[in-house]
Length: 117
Image (cartoon, rainbow, N blue to C red; front, side):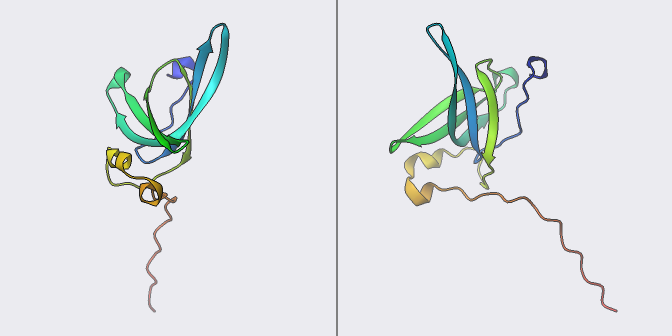
């Protein structure tokens, strides 16, 4: 990927990402943004892929992207999610507040214990 001038940020399931995809319509070429939650990630070298789920007009839409596809212009992480599963397929059966994912806040340095004198 470095040879193509693109870098893929390290993201994990639960993260909200914006995937910019190159779309060719006839002789026109444009970039389409697809924003959603990563519900699964498959690490298989060049065959790596990830699934992004979003709610579009009340209907859940999932799209699988090949990680190293030349059609992907960029991947931007919008929000880090705090989840305890590798595959978030349970989100398919949930809607509304139950489908929310807690945000992972940046870690703070541990507080040193006070020395009593």
